[in-house]
Length: 494
Image (tube, rainbow, N blue to C red; front, side, top):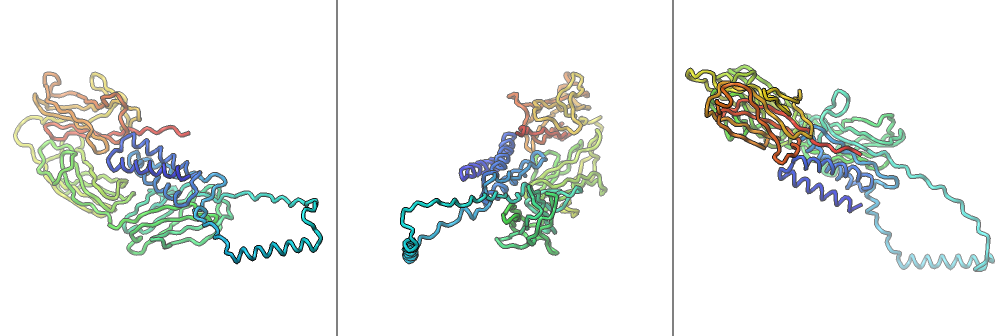
């Protein structure tokens, strides 16, 4: 089955190359889902332990990509080997028997001469016909396939239902304990099993071999505990044995640097900036904070806080699901229909309860009696709109099906004047995908009312799945941002 494994390896390498080039659209995610399905099926015919371990590693890496894009972690279990297959790479490496030496040939020849002499002594001439007594037929011993781990995963803590809260293959420095979750198939109570954790090809933790002794097929066990400093950084491998065979091999990594946030910046536009932009113009409605991160692992609690005149104004808590290292962005939107009040602000980012970075900025006070400033109300996302601005086909959570072709952003406005510059920016997964810029026409739209903008594919195709946002600007000042998502297409199973 080397051709099948080689083909899957080529497909995996091509997918990784596309991801590194940023080609992670809907077609890419469909190809990833198809690869994981094919790799699972390959488990029925790929017997070599190393290759099975490699298939699992490929699937888990791409499964994380799907999880980041869709929020759903796919099944990455290999199908059990077909009857007659054996998970033992040693069979493929078994050496051929060495040729017999001349002395051995001489001994065999002497044995043959002795046997012939015995036949002559007992009077059984060559060629004499005898009724042969048929040898008893040996009843074939049915091959019994050992239990196979249909799913194995690692995590740092358990959820309320006893399963892993955040399956992962990368852990933060300082992690106190790593837990394994096994789901086995065709387990016999008398089956002996055990697991080992290897680092640099040396076992650093293990469970003694013992009978399974359980009626259930699902278990969770701590497999690695650290000292006061936590589990040591490095590359590890979890091996599980059952019935004398390796049935699961999971590589995992403990990061070498602690969780860290750096280069925190604040802006009134979604594009990352090189430094804090201040003071901000009056009418500020959206505050964007950007930062770099490293040493981050799945499941960490990250808190973004906004302070006004020293008091906590807003707070956002997210569970980390991004890459261990890179850049991230979040935003705060002014409540109600009014912009942020003038004054001094601060934003801070905390990881696992420890504040990592904080920066301050000033929102400038509007001067002069200029009447009501131009402003927009909250943006409503819908799949249609009536002539009076009433939205059609909205979703409470702003999540729309994969076959969506057109999305409308509907908003109220006040204080508009002739020639006022305004624009709308649409983004998908943090990347700008469309922009339209206009000058306001009071004769057509008046100074207040309701208006809408629309986003669609000019070819008439469905919009690709992902997380979207639309931001409205008046005179280059961000007014409102609305977020929505479109589900990815998932082909039917079967």
